[in-house]
Amino acid sequence: MAIRVAIDALLIERGLSVGEFADKIGITPANVAVLKNGRARAVRFSTLDAICRVLDCQPGDILIWEED
Image (cartoon, rainbow, N blue to C red):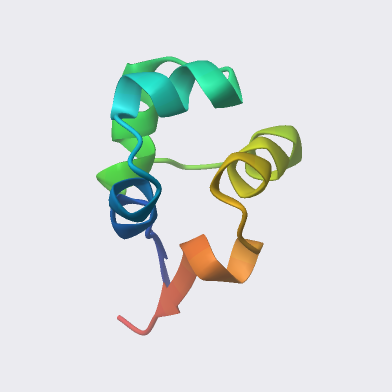
């Protein structure tokens, strides 16, 4: 099972840099990079909520399941 976090396109569409995005959701830019690069092992619901609020999207817009 592989879950991909697809926030790159949404950041570009919203005109947000990684630093701005990190500030708005309350995590470090390094942790945003971990999410973007697929190295995250878990995501807190509070972080997922903040991501969806800032990007004005649904969890299914950013969490994508891909078969191995």
